[in-house]
Image (cartoon, rainbow, N blue to C red; front, side, top):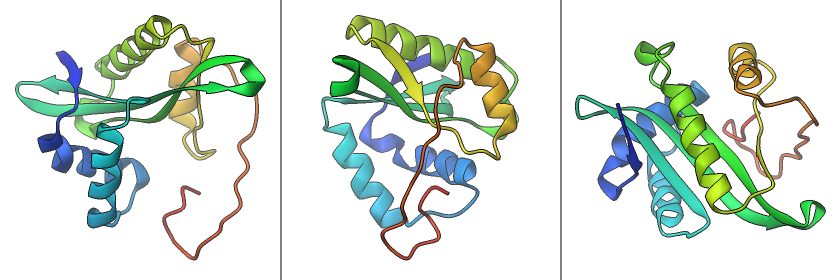
Length: 149
């Protein structure tokens, strides 16, 4: 298993994984624009897990200062493993790599948001030393089925 930074040509594999995570087909054109934009953003770190030349996992980590922490914070924005590869330690590898990245950037914490319905994901994160500490509240600003609810 190899962990590496994403490249522009990884778009299709990552699109497939994120659609799997969200359980819907996202707007491909808009997804591609955001993907390319984030690849060029120094605060964003996109990493993939590769097995036999196939992308089987993805994590996005954003590193930025937050006033209420008075420091840098690493935020795992997405973490997804291909369904057929789950349970093989790939998620743990990506979390460990994300933790190392956060420490290298002198972050105070790593945080993430996980949908209420993802009970198995919550168990995974808690097994990997994350603690429940808050709720995320959203206000929908545009009519869309794809607002992350």
